[in-house]
Length: 164
Image (cartoon, rainbow, N blue to C red; front, top):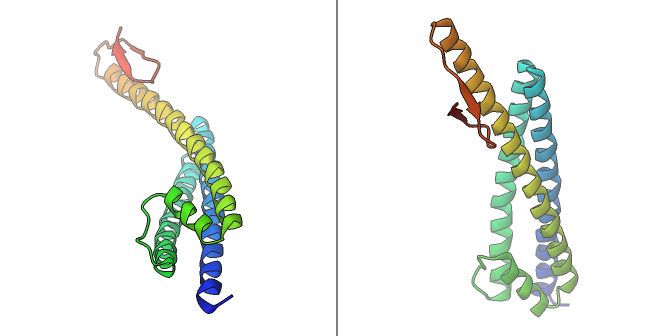
């Protein structure tokens, strides 16, 4: 193996490691998002604030990982003498063409895991948002009841209020 091949192997391993770290951090984000819902249900504002701060820290870390991923992808493309690919499938195709099948297969599997975790996060965030929408509507109704106005509402399946 020449020096360029060794560096390419090293960078492709780093790329795979970043994908693993993406999965781990997104799993952490999912767990914190579930904790957020638990604190919302319990009306535990102090724990909720701590959880929201933790969630933001994880998101910031994921953003740093994304910057690293872009940098490593650009370095790999340069080593291969190619334009930096915009899509992961293109990068994996390059890996296969340059004898990095194992790395490509591992990244592809990790990406499937990552996509599943992201879907779970989105579903949990939606659940959290529906709960918050209902809570805000209830607070508004309580506030209006103190003003002496009658205000009857029902909720749609998304948690949004509608006149009943």
